[in-house]
Length: 187
Ligand SMILES: CC(C)(COP(=O)(O)OP(=O)(O)OC[C@H]1O[C@@H](n2cnc3c(N)ncnc32)[C@H](O)[C@@H]1OP(=O)(O)O)[C@@H](O)C(=O)NCCC(=O)NCCS
Image (tube, rainbow, N blue to C red; front, side, top):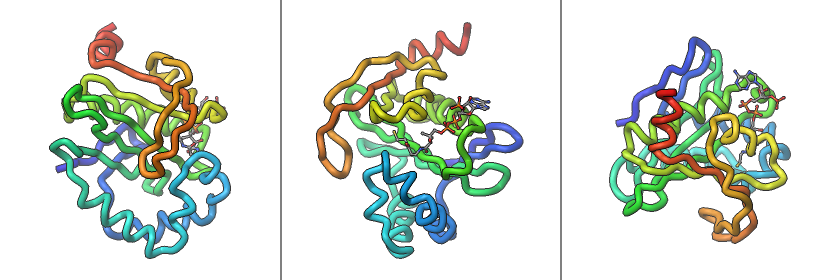
């Protein structure tokens, strides 16, 4: 079972819960144009019912096994700020991928860099991952800056097949191995 991660007195990552759909939909609807620039799923969340279904699916998603995932709501000063998740993408090699978004007004406070650091630790410590990848649109410098701040390696631009849509497009790739993570944290 997923338990909350208290990053500091202001930022908490916690599992999704039923009541999240309405406030989450409000944010997505308000920030639709900003979010849709880089998130392919935004258009599919057209109504509150769509978000309710998403929250339901996320809440019942497996936390172990070959489809393991850990999805968190990010709270900043007890307000929903966005979401972040890590999912197993290759169970044989124990590779995972992190995805994230913040509400527009929650940017520029360092919330995502710290959340991504905590979820990277969660992936290695709790999910037994050996490597974590982050893919960002080459035209999304704010997203690209997050793995770089955390000292992920810059693997260049690769052709990447997007989850869900199945569309293949150039994406900037970043990765962290468990060995480099342990070395980084013991330095
Ligand atoms: C990508 C996204 C999460 C980046 O948000 P962000 O606010 O730039 O990221 P952070 O929360 O880590 O904040 C970093 C900023 O806060 C500043 N900051 C303040 N305190 C900080 C701290 N303690 N640690 C790190 N950064 C801090 C940094 O200087 C940086 O600001 P700058 O860009 O002006 O230099 C956000 O733009 C977003 O959700 N966009 C839409 C969806 C999206 O693109 N998702 C990613 C798809 S791959």
